[in-house]
Image (cartoon, rainbow, N blue to C red):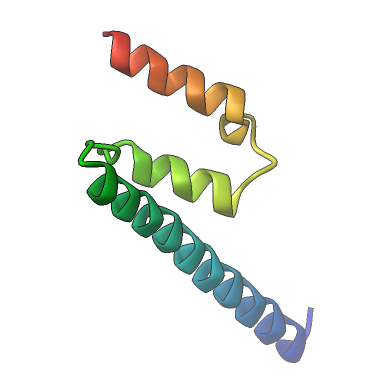
Length: 78
């Protein structure tokens, strides 16, 4: 791989990381606003990593909604 291709891939990865960060921050901000309006605690510590997984790596098994929700349910029950 030559230098321009490598640079283009690095730039693409940086742009994707930035978009993932902004999308995750927007999701958490919307939940925070909803929690404030409803006067209910909707934000919890494991939400951040889950949001990052859902936004940046949706094809991973851990990012499937069923797995994410089941994992949070186990955490709520225990």
